[in-house]
Image (cartoon, rainbow, N blue to C red; front, side):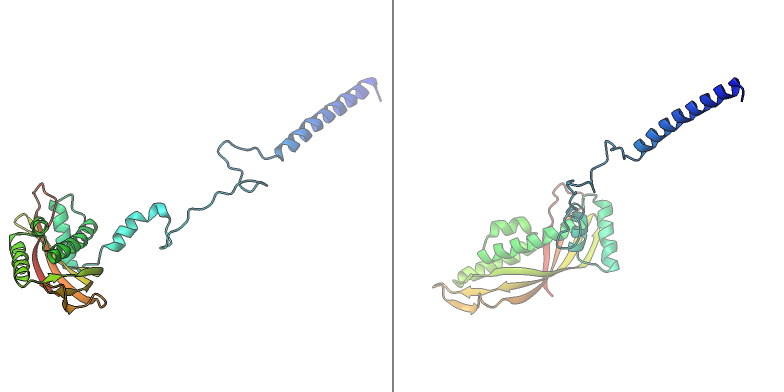
Length: 228
């Protein structure tokens, strides 16, 4: 073996040891995971696990239930009524069927309670001229008879669309409202002459609300009442 071969062999062995040393250390570092800035420490010992958002009673996340809830609260309507609601929405961009139902249910309670108490001023704001005149006449007759009403609206069980549409710039929507009412009539001395607060009766009313679609006043007025 010549001295040149021995020297080349020693150089090759030296380079091989250096290469092994570098690759070995690199492999050891690659086995250790590197924590990114946006990566949590889930799964690591002692780490806090992010709790999932809690569903509400309907099984939906709280942050995503508001709109589905409103849709569920709006009663179903037959195709003819849906077309009428769409016509109203086309001429009145502020119209929201679900919001209308919520407002109508509130108006139903307010009008009944105002009539029972004989509050004509409140009825004047919620009803059109014809309906107000009918309520006012009934209130006057009750006062002349010395009677008072001690009625209570227990709950509104159901609200359903009956009709809807626009004619000559005037929108009308008819609802059927089914409610439980405890009704009592008292005489001038306060004695019960009819009804009972212990037994609620079912009342079904068909009410029509209307408003001019181009009116700056957003309130709907009760313009017709009937029994279902």
